[in-house]
Image 1 (cartoon, rainbow, N blue to C red):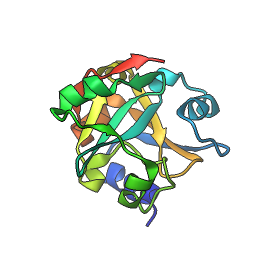
Image 2 (image 1 turned 90 degrees about the vertical axis):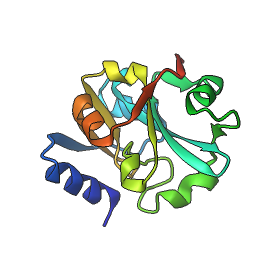
Image 3 (image 1 turned 120 degrees about the vertical axis):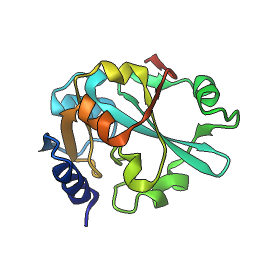
Length: 156
């Protein structure tokens, strides 16, 4: 089962409204936002963090970048750093590298959301490929994922 099918099954079971869209192949979050015709502040990008042997899923708008020092403080782990694709790709076998959805709960990973993303009424995120996205209300996302919200980014 693809992650998109698993995600749709999960959202349907929880009775959450969402839309799946397809666009041409793109790789960066800004390209996804442009392909989906949504503001970058609405595009939820996923960044993987490694702190010792633990992985943490971090979600923030495409218009922001992580300030690792702030995130390290939030996590209480001074050794936290950006994980390499090679390190985390095995965690998401159903996803193309770098296209995982922000549902860490489906992978038993803690999820941290930057406070700036909470301002979006609707979010758009990758659904396991470089061509598929899901559109849904932020409040539904947070209800399902129960992320920790903190401030750890700055505007690009």
